[in-house]
Image (cartoon, rainbow, N blue to C red; front, side, top):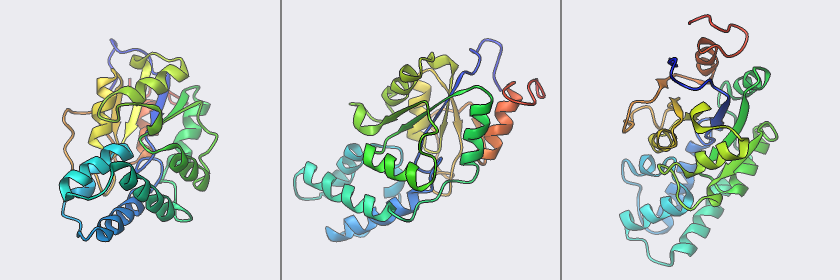
Length: 232
């Protein structure tokens, strides 16, 4: 619940993978195939450690964990191709994604996408799930030097919106993203999915909600939209 000392909410900044787009099972399949090509079976917890991270950081982690041979750039390029192939034609929006974005737009909030995915992955994901063109600003993983949990991508998104960080609410499914949002001075809503529900954020988020439909209810309780003030 927002307090009187917090800036009024002016913008939503949304993660993409696992939050708006049901891509993480597909990415896990690509990761499994990638490691199998290098002679490894996926160890428990591997996927969880890559969630929310940019491709360079995720591959760097895998290279260290599994002692992968070859140049880092070649490993990144190989997994990049495999992940795109796994996504193409198989993507669906997460339940409530379109409804939430429509609600926010009609309520007068600015909207930004802030995803660790590279631009080609973001374009494919948004197009296939009919979410393309719904944001006032977008920031992708190839536009920042430091990925989540550093705050850079959320600060870039807020700057492109022209909204102060304190007036932004970030929607995230992964602990790394929550940490990045809080480091940016933004409110952070955790909407965990099947892959992240068992993980533990480093610090408590502003609120934990079961799905994107409940984000609408949370916003209404903050005085956003048609039932302004309903919950104080």
